[in-house]
Image (cartoon, rainbow, N blue to C red; front, side, top):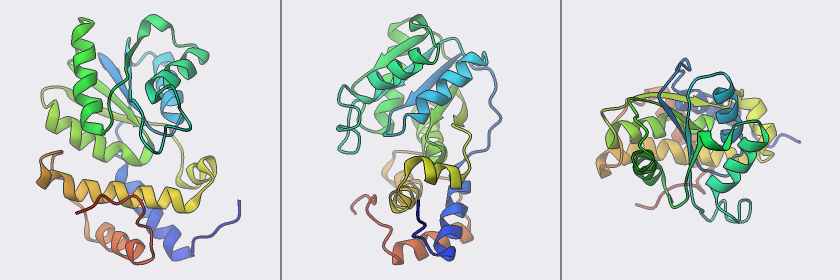
Length: 219
C-alpha cells in the first residue's frame, strides 16, 4: 500500500492512536462484551481472549450502521458470532445482541442480554477496536458504573492496523472522529469526562485542518 500521509500527519495520528488505548492488562472477568463495528478483528480478539480463559461468556453486540451494512449484511453481532465459532469459541459461550446502533446501546442492551440469560456480571472485559478503547471505557463507566471494566482489543501496532484496513485516510478520519466524541460526549451526558493532554489536542487540531473530518459528529 502506497503511503499517502505526510510524516507529520502520520506522527499526529499515531499519537492519537496511542491515547485512545487504555493500556489495561487483560485479566479474568466474569463476562465479556465485544462491540460491533466494521472490524472483524474485534471478534478475533474475543476468540483469542476466550481461549486464554479470561471469561466464560461473551456478548457480541451490534446491528448495522451505514459503515457496516454492506460488509455485514446480517448484522455485526451475527457475523462476529460466526467468525468466533470458526475460531473455536463454543456456541454456548456466546450471547447475541443484534439491535444496538451506537456504543451506548451496545452497553445497555448487552447488560440486558446478560440479565435475561441470568449471567452475573461483576467485572467486564470490554473488547473493541484498538482506537475505540477509551471512548467505550468512558461510555461503560457512565452507563454501568457498578461493574469493573477492563479494556481489550486486537494487539496491533498503528502501522499494522493501517495495513489491515488498507485505507490510511479512513483510519485517520476514524481516529479523529473518536477523539471528538471523547471530548464532546461528556457534556452531552453520554460518557465520563477524561483528560485530553495538550499534545493530543494539538495533533487533533492539525489533522482537522488537514481535512481528516469525515467521521465527525455534527454540532
